[in-house]
Image 1 (cartoon, helix red, strand yellow):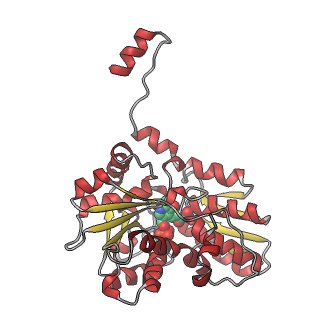
Image 2 (cartoon, protein in one colour):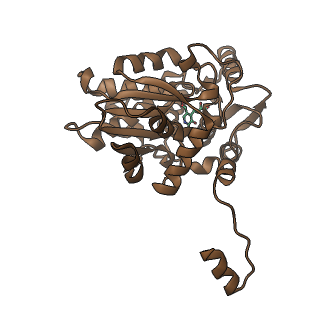
Image 3 (cartoon, rainbow, N blue to C red):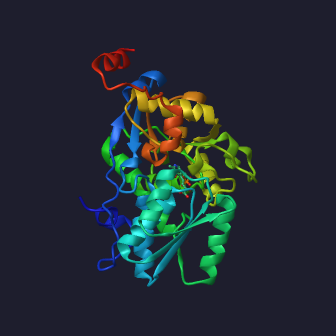
Amino acid sequence: MAGLIERYSDRLPFAAGDPIISLDEGSTPLLYACELSERLGVEVWLKIEGANPTGSFKDRGMTCAVSGAVRDGSTAVVCASTGNTAASAAAYAARAGITCAVIVPDGKIARGKLAQAVMHGARVIGLRGNFDEALRLVRELSANHPIALVNSVNPLRIEGQKTAAFELIEALGPERPLDALAIPVGNAGNITAYWKGFTESSDQLERLPRMLGFQAAGAAPLVLGHPVEQPETLASAIRIGDPARGEEALSAVAESGGAINSVTDEQILEAYSFLASRDGVFCEPSSAASVAGLIVHGVPEGVERIVCALTGHGLKDPETAIEVGGEIIACEPELAAVEAAVWG
Ligand code: AN7
């Protein structure tokens, strides 16, 4: 299967002969959620973005951002990250044979993401500060040095990520497209990208899905209407207090007739467990914010078919999973003990 730039060459800003750095990203499953559909009383589909090569949707944007950096002669890339951007940038930079530096809030990113960044050979910098401070610093750094910024402030990231919307329209068909998209919102690049993809696919605004964005209650600047100085949530990927593309996210929500709401950590964990134990889909806590949002705030009137963007794989954050999941039953290596353990 070809990567995104090849598949969508007519809708992405690359020309024949441009270098392409790809790990065969995209073409992720769109899975019907039987149990969640039953619970919500509408048709719910899950866009499994954890099936991308590094386990998150960031790969869609990163194939474009790193290809663009190589095309422009960059030999180094940098990003601020709550984890997934760092993992993705590190992998694509390794593939390209260029240097990568990632700045992450020290001690605040999930272990799986850290494992990826170090294994791909990035310089991993643990900042004594949060994501918003890290983003400010990398913007300044890239303005003053020949190092390409691959955060979603880079327009090529949005270009790549809009392809998820193309895939949804292809999968569901033009006859009955989706009525709404539920999506977690952190730095607000992804909701912006999906909306760009939808609007490029059709000029009939009334046929486009409503954008339902969800933030964690402790990091909900777009719901509150002002930046959050000290964002806090266990959904560490969306622990962001001053989203770079906040204005665009709010426009997407307004134009589509959608909404932005918040969900508590407790509500996120309930949705995270429900998806894993009932529908068999293990996503990371931040991704489950989209599902929690629908459970808590309800499905808007007139919405019958909805897609939840499950942005990252559950294995990214083994620590939260082990804390939230069931206990491990200790057992002696004897049949009677095993029988007792299996049947309780
Ligand atoms: C799993 O990696 O910002 O609203 O630095 O990892 O486009 O920021 C991650 C964000 C949702 C929010 N779900 O997307 C980063 C970073 C997962 C994420 C989001 C992120 P945006």
